[in-house]
Image 1 (cartoon, helix red, strand yellow):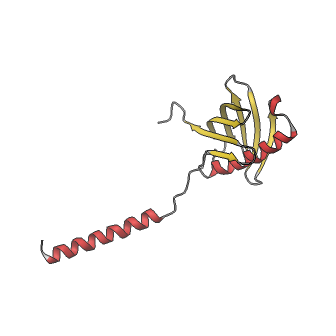
Image 2 (cartoon, one colour):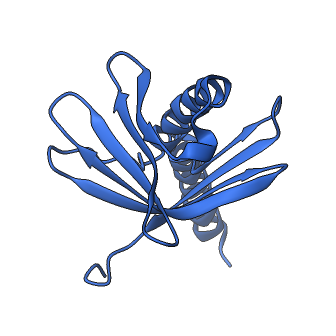
Image 3 (spheres, one colour):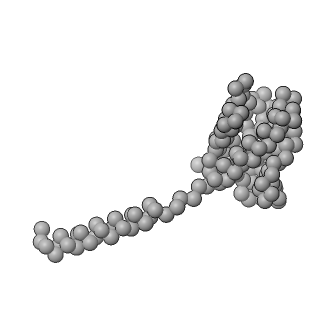
Length: 148
């Protein structure tokens, strides 16, 4: 290869390397896993695992004007947990829980953990682990059969 051709090839490779470096160095923004537009509905396969057992089923969240309503149905179609998330106030309100979870100390932990889970979902993270109480929350996004 001639010297001028070798120099132009080196310049080309250096410029490609610099371009790739800047493209890869750009911060990658995670996509929110929460409903983002008014009336939007998002479905998750949800599991809450504790030392003494677990709760699993489908969680559906719907975006309203000022809040996001959520409901977790167990495998039998029974509503296990109804909640409202207020993103602007960073607050969770439990609207209804099944009998086994309807204790003030359990609801206090649930509210705190759901708030952290909602924050994680906004960042594109679909899990949360409560170290203190050893509770795992997994919310895997479900795609509709009509989506491609």
